Image 1 (cartoon, each protein chain N blue to C red):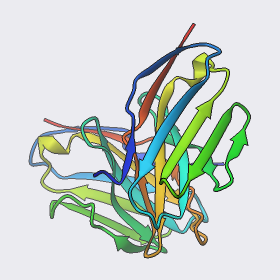
Image 2: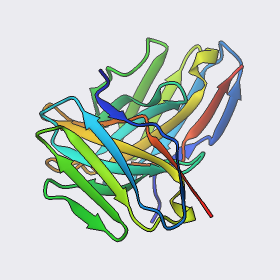
Image 3: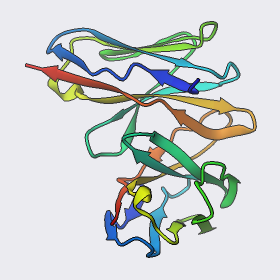
Length: 115
Length: 112
């Protein structure tokens, strides 16, 4: 079975450039999550969608970050313009939320470096 | 106070040792609890859910104390392959039903 798929796996870009990260959740899952992980701050939830609708975006750092989920099988996280402090590993996760059950399955992550 | 707090370690133990990790959470309304494992430069993976009555999965035992807002993970007969970061995870439930909050993680190194 295919797990969560993320692309690219690695991205190196220069400050000011636009970065787009992509995620394909597990088929049949109804929720998708974007996380950022750094040594200093650990794993932080940026935004999550339920049935393609953004539910909580309180973790999105600022207006430079935006996320979309146009359909159940695809989501993007965009950073424009990027800054060196955005360097981190960005994980996408998906789950089938049912009542209190919310087991999240993570993709392999995108390692972003902004120079 | 952080929502989920863990002792970051690192814990360095010999093979065969028993090791325990602790975690506290601040939201008394939290509904579900998990331990995730993260290997170096990999994604977090679910290790086990934590149930109110406590639960065991092979060498791993998880306990929950709702009154003290405390979660624990016990690993018996440690293996080299248990070396990883262990993340305590809490689901607040309610209107935040989808939101998992992760602790900073506890680093475990098992040596020969």
